[in-house]
Length: 377
Image (cartoon, rainbow, N blue to C red; front, side, top):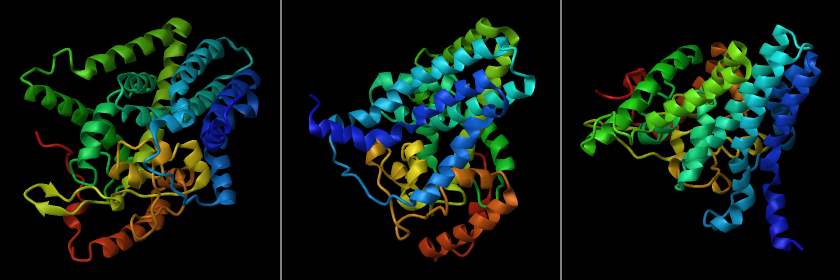
């Protein structure tokens, strides 16, 4: 007999397991073809946006002192997802090139949808796992990132982004008036360079060269090479092409979210290259209920940067007095980000209002608007 308290904990955690429902949709598209290959992006973007509108905001906060033992049903979904994603991704890479009923366009659209979930869910879960202290969860994060050829994201996120967010040294902080189509190629280039440089500098402080075995880039490259080799072994050049295509879409999804999370928000410069400490005001917050279920509270991003070691069910949401608020959840905001005039019409007035509210003493914002290199040499 399962104790009533355990049943109650499972029930509270159950909405965060919705992501598992996306995996059968991938196989429905592969088996049935036709319009069903559109199911993954339609559900992930539009259905959850509609549910957000129906269910509204969730402004409740869990007790941040909740013990780890009470979070099992929350953390379990992030721990089982890597195996499910691996089986789904490589199962489809094996199956789809052999499926005579799928045309070329259907295949491309289907793996676009696969990239949507390996990015929206897979990279998001890797983000949760990489912040944990035990090594096996970090290994799961590395495996998820290797499946989208973006393994360096762990080094960039932990060593660069969290340290320099809201400053010119962070490639991932979108500058005011910087459209996504300029942001994306800049971040692809700068984040890889800054991640490698950060690891190299850490080794140098220990008196070791970048070639040392402790450099995690050796693990990143090995895992990514193994994923590529497996795709080729399962389906030849077609398998390789499908794997790379879904990886590109996944990274595009990640960087769309990164663009939204900090657009135009900057920490105050204190002089001599120093900035104020990170506060909830330096990330956009969103309390939309359904998309936070799908994204395991990623939209409570203000608290994540304020308290990076908090597990996702304990992340707090804030009101407008403490953190800037997005008008919609990420599914809607990322679509808006792809249309720069629409994005700027929605967000630029909010950035200006944020500046007036939190930094009325700053009269000249031009130095903060510049897209500078993220790290000094």
